[in-house]
Length: 614
Image 1: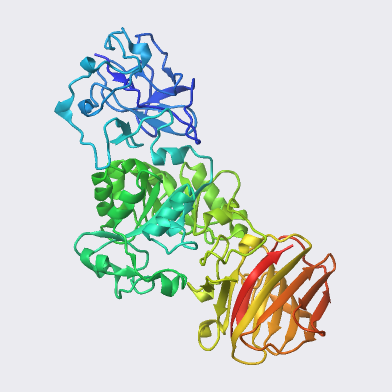
Image 2: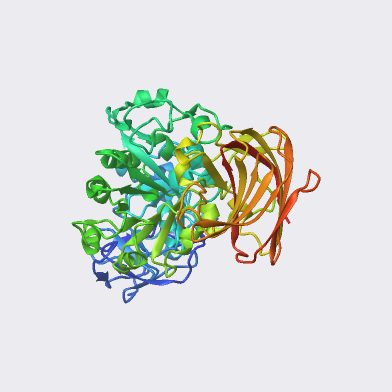
């Protein structure tokens, strides 16, 4: 007996945009990867296909398999993705739960096909087969009219069928490289690993979202990154020592470490919460952080029937074992990508097709070699355009994991004015490494201030200096005028300063550290509390004075206005709200174009508003 594959109309091939792929020929194989090609295939009408199956006018795949074969077969249209096709006779669905059942019009009157269809192209109600013996329950949230779909592992799940229906992970696979993944939900724009961050990543159309999970002492799974709970929550101690009730009583105190305008009572999400919130809306990469978390995550994923929507990621292959056994995609993290005690071929043979590498440790040649071996390479954690620009552009980077993927890829809305009004961080506002999580504060009342505080001992660990890039303004044109108001609220001494660095490229600017990695080429402009304005050219990590002027001292707490004019040959810095002497002109044309602004402070508390570039 030959079994019909895809004749339920649910096997629809789509492109990256979700459109049905019509008239595409493909070969049929015995396995998702490797395997052997199947040529003994017939159309539903019984005509030999020669081994080639073509998608119909709605992008659907349908054929008769070899005599007596009931195993899952895989259709390959030549784009690198194989689609799981199950035989109708063995894929028993409780179709009595479904009001109507769509079938291929070409099967009407054929052997094994329906005698007729109703006016909408569905089976007549008296022809619906009784498949209740192999009932598959519809999960919570399902509804009458749903149909059974299949994930990349072949496991079934309920969903809405349209001509473009495709599972979240399969859709991600079909997208062009690189895919953009919101790390910890987009940790530069929302408090990391919170439901709020996951919602934001989905709302802003990230290609996928990455979260971290820990297994706790009672077997539960909750979402957090660090081995300690101290940094991001009001709890203390080792993360793995928690229990599920303890995680539920705790809170993410985002107002303390992320931004002062955020609440301190965000819930610490359970893993189940994240799956229920976003499991069928956006692909989820699940970073399993401790022993047993991989198996526990897979169990919860299967309970919610979301194997088609996730990837399991870990630093050890042991935590990937459960995902491999379940047919869920898995990724091994290895900072430099070279692998120790394993080979690329061995990793693939073990059932893991994805490799995650650190952009700062893995060479481009290593990334390319891993991709050439057949691995899908994801690069983490890329938060600056200059770092992304240094990666291979030949398609070997399958995905980019970033705390702000919208900014790095360049598809967030760039601006000529500040974005301080919303009272939280905007795209392109990373801080310096030595400041850890600190990037500043907001006063969300007109005129909407953003500020930095390195007065007293606030930033003593970095010599009293801190800065935050204003990347949404960059890159600045070759000639421009930058205006803004500022207030120095507190100053530790007369020469303490407000600073504006203009760096070539969007790498960090740290005025308290030497070396080109922390002080990129460009300019640094200082306004000191005693009124002195200094202009420095920075080359190779060394600052050279190119202009200075003594102006009236600044009274703390008063609003000042600064104008920075960049011409083809000069940099003019002016305090426009005071009488002369109020301006310094530095003649220098070393760096023009591709400059990014950074607001910084040394031993002051300063705030900015009404920023505008013309």
